[in-house]
Image (cartoon, rainbow, N blue to C red; front, side, top):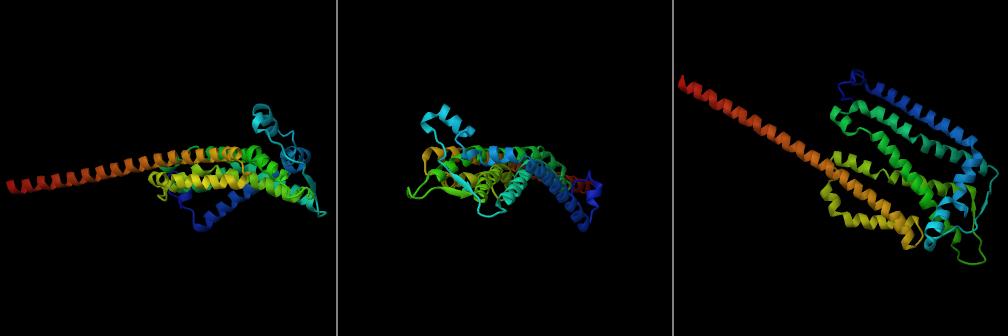
Length: 296
């Protein structure tokens, strides 16, 4: 897989040596996740009171900012009783939260290990083009997670905790269900925010192009609206709060793909010009040789 001539040892590695290298990258990533998860596990009070249960409290920063700065759009969660049904649920939820946060916090290092594994298989120009990829991917992922935590989670919890089919039914949830919901509101958003990077690689290998994205821009808007409607209450304002960032990500992706298309076009034009120049030089050389033969 290795193509980087600057890394001779990578070029000489066999298939099983590549597997061994991959094993060590995965092992180091797992160790980093576990170490951070242990630290998170020990910070139980902060993690649960501030992070997991935070969006369930009217004092959460998102509710306070909206009520202070945008009183017309002030919203707060309803009373939500959180219970456990199994004796091991609190402990297992604690472990699940610790591992999830361990993965989120360790994501930059995990992606760095992934990059170290694939880097020897890239050409020098590809490495230059992907410079800063670890930082960009990490920032996009963490931004998406924070967006899910501070925007998507409060909106969804407010809607779900205040929704009622009858006054005789009170809203309760299990701790495990709440943890699963918080995971769903945050981790997928981190992955969604990687859209520009995904489009970059798809454009590199020729699966998508700027013309293709432009042609189906309206379809993309419909998909974004559907996604925003699914993860938010049926309210135009909250749908816009989620939909607009997603649409901005799509437009950024189009800019990235357009740049890749221009680079490909310049490369093709250069290769075509070089090929024509080579043909011209060969023809001129043949004509010159024919003239010499004629004179002789």
